[in-house]
Structure formats: structure tokens, C-alpha cells
Length: 259
Image: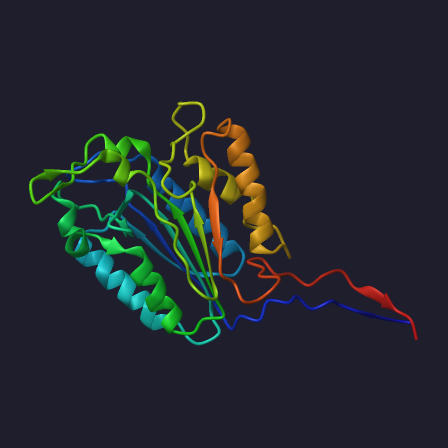
């Protein structure tokens, strides 16, 4: 009788993560959670073997530099994870991540003043990673009450700013804090908490060993929905081409092998 360990299915060469938290906005409503969210996410990812680049409260120029350096670091067959906590907005069928120095200007300037999330995802996928995981904790409701979009002096309905548009990418999984077009809430109880609601439950489960990321996010979705009384339901766009994507892959207990 012999024993053998069951190998895990994940085939990534390396595990790389870029974690961004932006809360100290200069011209729009500041957010208290993103720095904590980024700090805690960095700690959890490092503990399960990710090499993590953490960046806080970046301006537009600094965001460009960090994103470009991270993109260049990716090698073929790496597992790539991008986490963003901060303000985000949909405009003209595109999703934008907002830097700390975003001016309170017309939406037509978002291409120059913010980061196009789909474009960055496409850039990452061009590097041919094993898998790309996008975790976006943004589009909070407190943002939309202060940021005015005025395109060519024509008033734009606030509803067009609510939430994110669905994104897609072959070989990628994108998790949104809420369903497309629906703004997020910071907490279910209205009380100040260390982490945003989505990140709170993501942190609780992201280290689950030998669990497919789809299953982890399914549990997170259920718990966020329960905590928020269905006011917030995370949404996942799954374009993964592989099965059994484990963020925390550990050798399983040996099993008996009968001759």
C-alpha cells in the first residue's frame, strides 16, 4: 500500500497581484474604507503566495505609471489579480476607475482624467496570463451626489452614472461589487466599518484552500445579499477558460493507493 498527494489543478507560473485603494479624493467625496481594504487585501494575498504591488491614493499620472509597470511584469502563464477599491463610474458604455485628483469636470474628459477599466483588462490579457481576475469594489452611492457630468453644457441624468457596465474578457473573471447599473452601498447597517461590504466578505473567504474562485465569489455574493437585505448583490462576469482556479492551492492530504 502506498500513499500519494493529489496535485492541485492550478497551473499558473507565478501569482501576481496589483492592489489599489483610493480614498483621499481631492475634489469629490473622500472614502474611508479603500485604504483599509487595500491593506487587508494585500496581507491576505501575500499569505497565500501572491507577489503583491500595493498602491494608495494615486493621482492620474501615478496610476498610469503603476498600471504600466505591473502590466510589463506579467509573463505568460502567470495568475494575475487586480483589486481596486475607490470611486468608479460608467460613462458612454465604458467603466472608469477614478484617481485621487479627478477634477469635477465634464464626463467627456474621463478618457483623459480617469482609467478605462476594460482597456486595462485587455492590456493585461495581451500578456497571455494563465488567468486574469478583476475584483472591483467601487461605484459607491455617496459619490454620485457630488460629481456632476455636463457634456457640452447638456445636463446628463445621474442614473447614467449609477453602477458599472458589465465587462468581458476571454480567460478573465471580473467581479463587481454590485449588478451592472446598480450603485453600491458602503455598509449594510449604515455604521462605519473597517471594510466595504463586498471586501469584508471577500477577505473572509479568499484564503479558502483548494476552492475555485467561482465558488468563493458565490459564497461572497450570498453573504453580501443577506447582510444588505438584497440591496446589494455582487455580480460576476465569467470568461475563464480553465477549471478549478485556486487562489490558495495547497497539497491535499495523502490518500491510500491500493496495489
